[in-house]
Image (cartoon, rainbow, N blue to C red):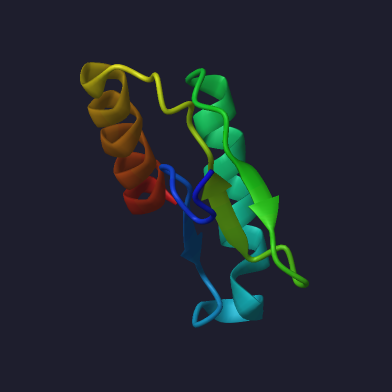
Length: 75
């Protein structure tokens, strides 16, 4: 087993107003409404993290990435 391998990724909003906590929450909420499950993380809950299965299809990964970018732009 190799540690640190996988598709986990994290986006931090710490440079936004209020440490980015409100923005991160809005992004998670919008994505949940679209069926994309990510979660808040970090000590100030100002980061979003996605940990997809290694078996995810490339098309599903691309759809999720586009949804995340759109949710961030709209927030």
